[in-house]
Length: 502
Image (cartoon, rainbow, N blue to C red; front, side, top):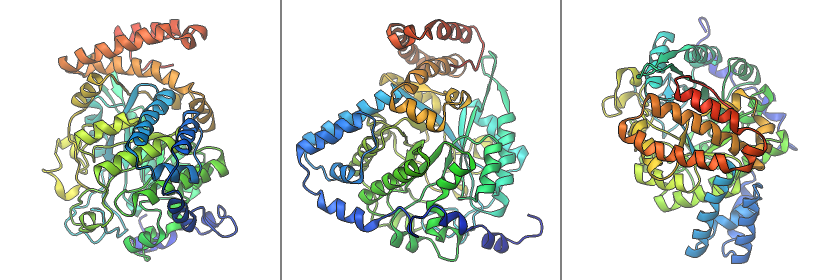
C-alpha cells in the first residue's frame, strides 16, 4: 500500500461480479415486503400454533419466516414463558450447560466509512487514530492471555492499513505468543482467533483462511435498505448494501466454513431485524448447506463523537431484548448466540439464561488498552462505543459457576475438523454438545488451576464435580469408550499438562 492513495484503494474494493453471482434473477435474498406482510399477518397468533412451532425448534430445525413471525407477535405472558423455557431447553440440547468465553482485541480504529452511529467514522475528529504494530499486537496478546483467555475476536476498521495482509500478519503474531501461567504450571496461549473485519473479495478472504482465521464475523448493521441508506453515505464502501449482505457468502466460497452474522439493534425495528437475520441464515443454508456459526444481537450503545448512537428512534429496551434473544434461539436453533459486555451485568446474566452460548469478559475496547490496562473512562477517545460491563474474567466466571453453569475455553472442535457442514450435522443431532462438555471441563480445569481466585475456584470446583458425575453416568461416553481417555486427560491436566482436548 505504499503508492496507492486511500481514495484509490476505496474505489477498488467492491467487486460487482462477486455480488451478482449470488443473486437470483437479479434480486437479493432480502424480501422486505414479505417480511412486513408476514409480521402483520401473524399479529394474533394461536396458542396451539405457537406450541407446534416450539416443538419444531426442539427438533433443532430452522424455523420458516412465517413461523418466526408468529413467535415475534406473541404477547401472552404464559406463552412467552413457554418460549423462554423452550429456548433454554434448545440451548441445553445443542450446547449443554456451557458458556464459551472470548476477549475482543481492537487492532486499529482507522476507517474510511461514515457510519453515523460509530465512533470510528472518518469524520469523528475526537477519535485519536492508531494501528497497532506487530510489536504492539504481541504485547496486547500477552496481556489478554494473562487474563486467562484462550480465544479472541480481533477487530479491525475498514482502511488500506488494515487490509488482508495486515490482518494475516497480525493473526500470525497473535498465534505465536505463549505465556507462562501465574502458577508456573505450563503455559497459556490464544488457540482460536475469530475476526470482525470489513467485507472483502474472495481472493483476500482466502488469505485469511490460509492464515488460520477462526470465525469470520460481519454484521449487516440493519437489514432495512431505506434505513441502511440513511446511516451509510453512498460514496463510501459501506454505502453498498449488497456488498455487505453477501460478505458471508464470499467467505464460504473462500473456504472459511464458520461465519458469523449480526445486526446492530437500535438502528431499525427489532422484529424486522430478527427476520433479516433469519433470511440471511436461510440463504446461507440454501446456497452452501451451512448456516451461521454464531448470531450476534448487539444493542447500540453511546459512542464518542457519534450523536446518532443516542438519538435513534429505534432504541431497544430490556424487555424487547429478552424477547428477540428468545426468538433467535428458537428460530436458528443450531447457531451460537453471543451476548457481549455492551450489556449491563443484570441483563447480560438474564440473556445467558435465555440460551446464549458465548460472552466476553475483561474487555477493553481502546487501541492498546490491554497492555496499558486502561479502562474506557481512561481512554474514551479510542473506543468504538461504551461498554456496560467492565468486570474481569474471574468475577464473571464465578457468577456463572454460582448459577450452575460451566465456563468453557474450548477450541477443540475447530482443531479436530468439527467445522462447517460436519459440525452443523453434529449440532443438530446433539452430538457436538457431548464433545464440548468434555472439553469444557478440561479447559475450565486449566483456568481454575492457573488463574482463578480462591472464591472462584471454590465455586468452580462444585460445578466441575457435578459435570464429572454427569459424564461418568452418560451412556454416550461409556458406550463410545470416551470416558477412559477423558479421565486420563483430566488427571494429566490436574498434574500440570496443558492443551489436551477431545
